[in-house]
Image 1 (cartoon, rainbow, N blue to C red):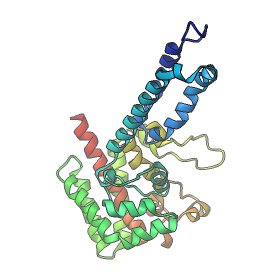
Image 2 (image 1 turned 180 degrees about the horizontal axis):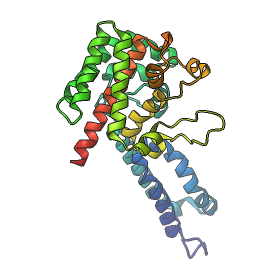
Image 3 (image 1 turned 45 degrees about the vertical axis):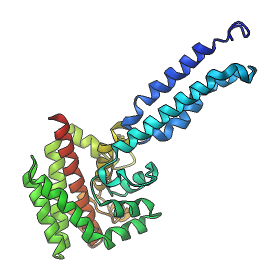
Length: 296
């Protein structure tokens, strides 16, 4: 082909494209966004190639079929890696996508380890914040049970004392003492954050802009951390949003750690928020156990 079309080396071009794709794909498995970006990466990688081959006869481009197969394999591997990174309660659900996971995380709702698959599926399919909040309330008993299972398992690990306190928070919520149970779950969450991360890391993970003039740049958890970590930390980050002003407190009545600890108001105490606080603590407890196993 190079003899017929001087100056165009198809093999070199294919190698360049593959190198570009592989360089991007290597990091895909670390981010839930990865497999959804494959199409964008392919388009960018193919742009210089497309302009160079428009005038080449189709029979002389058999190698393009090989490239297509290679690209398909890369895409399948990235998607398979994404599915392997899902927690057990999501792994066998059909059509799990990033957008609803992010929507939930940015409302302070985690799907890591809890709740069970059927409830997680309903949350993923819910179209509005109100619908998702309604599920937290209507499925509260089942969600609390799932969190209790995580807490019982955690009682045999390095965070046993906090796991037992989480069990206690669940019992208190079940007894109808929502304010006490929610406050205890929030304290468990906060203590897990403090004992598990350095002060600098913890501050970075939960940093928010507290005013228009703030120099803080909140971290993009799904872009900077692996999927498991982001699934837990992004909703935790939302739960640590500022609650200093009436406007901040009015912006969302969903569970807020600072709202539960420092600026408690009637709207902040609810069955849905109590369930949400327990879910976050249970998810973090489970994630820390996973990380400990990986290090050992």
